[in-house]
Image 1 (tube, rainbow, N blue to C red):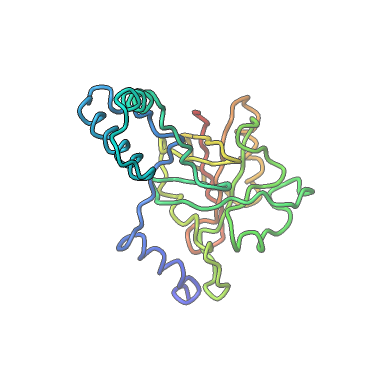
Image 2: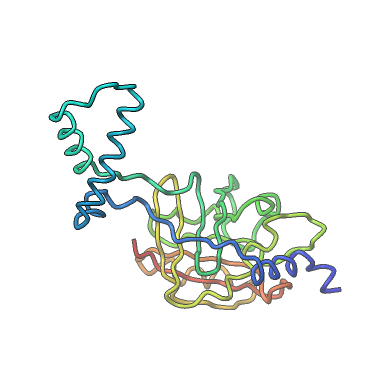
Length: 237
């Protein structure tokens, strides 16, 4: 019965082991060209020359560019900071150590006071969910994100096992959250296994310490719903 009910979990776990798609740690910007090539003058000159040639090609310049213009362009290229925001669009949760990169939804439900209230089945069909009464990243307190670790395969939810690997997280692992174009980073500090009725009290232990935290939660053991696994991380940037 376990094999039938958790067919999706089994297939996704197989994918993790034998055909993983690596997830990389997010970077907000590229280092400027000046910093990258500070000790590589020849490489910098080569890049500048290639760009000048492209410039001439685009303008269909038949004669050589005046030397003073070439020098000006080279100077501008050397000094220009080629910085770009590399963050993915939308709100996302990225944990490179367990190969996780998924969207996060801010649910519209606002009237649930405790984590045992209400149902989020619809939201969990497409996203990792931020619990509505908890703060957003950057607003202080303890942000609470939850997702499925397993789900009956016939429900056809591509995020039905999204948190299957959070039990592998250990102290010091990096967790990244993108919210409205900003990157927030956390380090795992603790993992706890609790009965559902103790989720709220356990969460509050990290909500009242005056620091900023992130909590991830899913059902546990994997493939069952007896308890909940809660991973706590402290914000570092």
